[in-house]
Length: 256
Image (cartoon, rainbow, N blue to C red; front, side, top):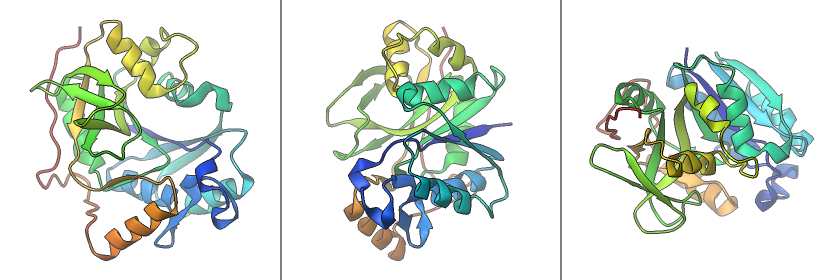
């Protein structure tokens, strides 16, 4: 059974004062929290179990909103607090080490709004043979670094800046990767930096999935306003599970 995690444990300082608390996952878009949008997206994709990772600095108002946001969904949801210092890498490792090596984990950063078809991404990841598939997008507003890949979708390099395709903060990862991430130096606590570290060490088993639709890092209220307008104007497509609609592509690779 494929599971998912949402990384929502930051302080959310860039959104301070919004709705009385400061975490982006709890900010409302068209009357629903960003967390609700992500959970509904996972549910449409066939995900039945989701763990929401918080930390000791997660505002109580946000935690209360999380509890309300998860009360009416038909999926099994767990809220798990972990120390902020372990970062996204520590949370992903924690989740991966609890699932079988051959099962998959969907990873979502909690500040992302996107109409990516997770069901299609998951399906294509499972056919590809990659240990992890990172969703990539175009744009100059993406904070997670640049990805370069070959014609088969195999990642060839990571860069901090550029004008090509960018990491979106969305991934599908096999449980086996949890054990490989144990090799990452302890000073690294970001998940995608950990993946880059394994790649630099010679592991050529990570691929890409191209998303050509809507994607935003909800970093401030201007993005909320922009996203609400895009929803009203039907510029955002939220597909049902298995609905491909021509979106996305991955390649295939042998794991070495």
